[in-house]
Length: 242
Image (cartoon, rainbow, N blue to C red; front, top):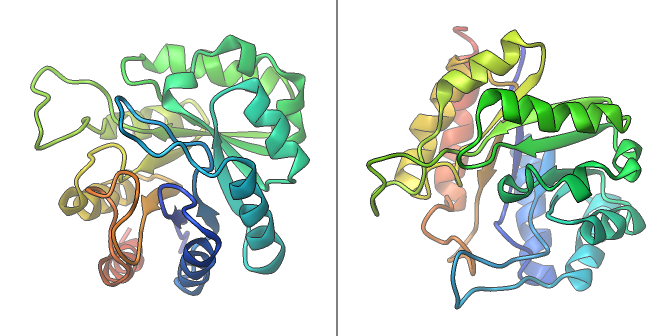
């Protein structure tokens, strides 16, 4: 049985205690990578801008002592700092998918695996084009992360709309697929059904946000520890019948 690889953690690194506690929890849940952002920001203020280099120090400690980590990069200076602090993995933000100043950095090739989130209005071909820039820079594996796309009936009930068909299409083109179950919908009650749908569609990876209490960023979409534990149990159950 092939198990989906789960990257989980809080939306952003809030402080050392919170990050380490969450990392130990997701490690114990059998997750592959602890994911969290160190650079914040948001569609409009007010928003939390992240701990930045202090956050990188915390993530480096987690990488050394607990489990592999992943952070988001949005620009070239983020990439250089990720290398400086020896991050295990990086993902390119959806809004940076066509940031060619970033995609053209030869330093990206120092990562064997890079997650590329799909832009909110980008086609599959445009997504693949961005991935080919990464391959051209020496990245061994590009993981295509469906992060949800803009849709005509957007309303407060759903942040974006995950395109499940894209997970199948990128696999047909020979790439690894991932669903960002949290950002793609923006509501915690939809995270589980979307995650299970992605597993059924053959996704190799899931990215899920979990937080013990109330998150400082994107709190509406994070699963608490109990609900996350229940979701992982369901994921492992559905894998057995595929």
